[in-house]
Every structure is written in structure tokens, then in C-alpha cells.
Length: 284
Ligand code: SF4
Image (cartoon, rainbow, N blue to C red; front, side, top):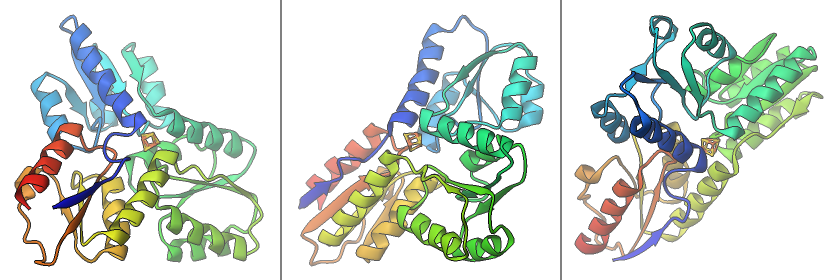
């Protein structure tokens, strides 16, 4: 079987940095507890391994407030300003692994909202990165997830706003939503904050999916950037399969399959990608 392996598959810079940070802390640890604020990565295989090594996940503010000693690591998605304040007030050791690209959005949102702009985040409502970004706005903040949301918001907010995007948002979808705002005489600031890693991965996924008979997208069920790759791939290749681990293979592939494409979300560890790639090469 011939395979096209995506060059941009797997951990992006920000996720690798955050995961490495946790493993470094485990290595250096003097026995005091290590926490992550939220799941460090949307991949249950990695989360399970960290749990076995003693890392505790804090799911919410209340759990964070109950911590009295140890190290708290902030994940690549970042956290709201309020969370940083709580951490500072509790005298805990804080390691901020917020991806610099996400941090840049926090800074834009903080500055623009301080200057009186209303903030519009184009992203998925309830996603931790979006929640974190929301938490840096000092005034009104809105999330537009769909074209319908954009139409309603564009009517409501005609000016004096700043638009940013979730780093992992679908690039084409972002363009459509931004068009809706600009068509409604929107004259605020628009900053495309989709990160290059995401854009490159999405573009590459679409190009590979166009060429192959079958496309395999590897990632965790909770990973929104993987879900977006599946969505992009399905538009180009009807035989797109989403798999989490090797257990989800073998697949019943169409008999005419001669070329398979493989890609993976930003939170998919290399060992899982390699295992699946090897299996596909030898068994299909
Ligand atoms: Fe950072 Fe981009 Fe990775 Fe998000 S996708 S963690 S912004 S490198």
C-alpha cells in the first residue's frame, strides 16, 4: 500500500513544549505535588501516563483554590487572568506553559478591551483556549462559532470592536465569518490569530485528502483541532476515517484503495502515529 504521510502530523511546538514541561517537572520533583490546570493536552493516552506518574489534574477554580502547596502548570491553551491571580495569591510554584501564540492573543485582547473595544472571538464556545482568551477581556466579549452567530453579532456590533480567532480555528471558516462582519460595515480591528502550525496542517490535510483513496486522521476524540482535520478531509475524500489508537484499526477499506493518506492532530503523540503508520504499511 502506498502512503502519503503528512509532514505536519502530530505535536505542534506549543503542545510539545507544554508536555515536555510536565515531564521535566516530574524528573526534578522533590516529592511535592504537581498539578496541571486542566488537561495538559487533549490526548487521553498522554494524560493516563502522567496520572500514573502522579500528576494531578485540577478541573476548575474550586479545585485550584483548595491547593495549598506544590507546582501548578498552565497548559498550552492558557488560562484566564483570574486564574493567574488565584495562583499568585496562593503562593504556589507556577509554571506557565501557555503557548506564546495564545499568549499573544491574551495581550491583544487585554490591550484592545482596555482601549474600549468590544472583543469578538471567532472560535468554539466552551473550548478551554477560548475561555482563557475571554478571561483577558476587560469589557464586553462575544464568541462567534458559526455563520449564524456572526450574522447576529454583526448586526449588534457595527463598530468599535476587535476580532481575534482561536488558534486552531478552520482557516476557510474564519474567512467566511470575517466576511460577514466586513459586509455589515464592520470597521474594527481584525487580527488573524490562527497559528501557522494549524493553518499548515489544515491546508496540507486538504491537499493530501484530494489525492488519496482513503484518509486516516489520528487524534483524540476530545481534540477539537483533530475534529477540524476530519471535517476538512471529509470534504475532499469521502473515505476519511478518524482513529484514536491502533485499536481502531483494521478498517474495512474500499477494495479499489491504492493510496492512503495519514495525518494527525496537534495533540497526537508520535508513538501512536508511528504505530498506525507501520500497521497500515504492513497490513493493508
Ligand atoms: Fe501553539 Fe499553535 Fe500549537 Fe496552539 S496549535 S499550541 S497556538 S503552536
